[in-house]
Amino acid sequence: MSIEQVFVAGAGLMGHGIAQVLATSGRRVVLYEPEHARATAGRERIAASLARAVAKGRLDEEAAGQAIERVATTDEIAAVGTADLVVEAVFEDVDVKSGLWRQLDRLAPPRAIFATNTSSISIDRLAAAVSEERQGRFVGMHFFSPVPVMPLIELIRGSATSEETEAAIRDLATDLKKQVIVSADRPGFIVNRTLMPFLAEAMRAYEQGVGTADDIDTGAKVGLNHPMGPLELADFIGLDVCLGIMRVLWDGFGQEQFRPPRALEELVAAGHLGQKTGRGFHTYPR
Ligand code: CAA
Image (cartoon, rainbow, N blue to C red; front, top):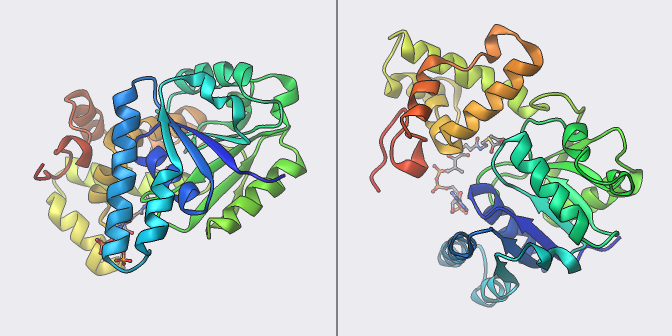
């Protein structure tokens, strides 16, 4: 099926990035947040990112202008009524996501594919929020941050996901110039199952005074050729998001490597969520 109109629920770090790549690929996008100012802020971030791409010569000015014109914002969930595809990129919490999917299922056209950008929660568990007819069109489509830069999509099929739905998401990914990997519907899928123990171990090393935050990060950057050190990467992803993912992994597997570190719990409890609040394992000038 052809995907022309996309409703993106959530205009945060992931949601606005997903809206940007969809709009740049020629699709019309409605960016939804229950609070309109947040949707508008997401659209402004897209405009700024497109302007940077133009300044760097990666995109011509006309294409950037057309892309931003394709992004509308709304606080009306009923705007999902014309969507071919719904992408959900809201906070990593099963109740928040399920509640939203339940509402969207009542309002979206029967043809619409439902793709969740969950980074760890079971697709079958989220699909339980929608009607049986929709479950064949429910799929995991996990993007990586920054979405315009990272060329990977993890595709996760639930037990009811149809071949047609998988094919439509694969075609879309190709059009977005993203490479697809397929993961079974297990906690954390492939990437976060392998990434989170690394980030957690770096946090435990920090907690135990093995090294400073800078030295731990420099170890991975200079010694392993990673673009960011593990603490810096956790700050970049968002410490609340990392904690949410680690909790899903810890609940799902009960293995020590997935246990959320104390330093992470404490930072999140204090409201220090990483880059987005200006402080996490490192501090960031606002
Ligand atoms: N939006 C759009 N483009 C961006 C961007 C953003 N937020 N941030 C950086 N870029 C672009 C820059 O414009 C630049 O493009 P050009 O080379 O064409 O000029 C390119 O990315 C490199 O940027 P910079 O030179 O400014 O900075 P850098 O070299 O330090 O790279 C980075 C920045 C790409 C973020 C790099 O540090 C990196 O790859 N970090 C690791 C990111 C990562 O691991 N992401 C996955 C996180 S896990 C996840 O998302 C899933 C989950 O469920 C938790």
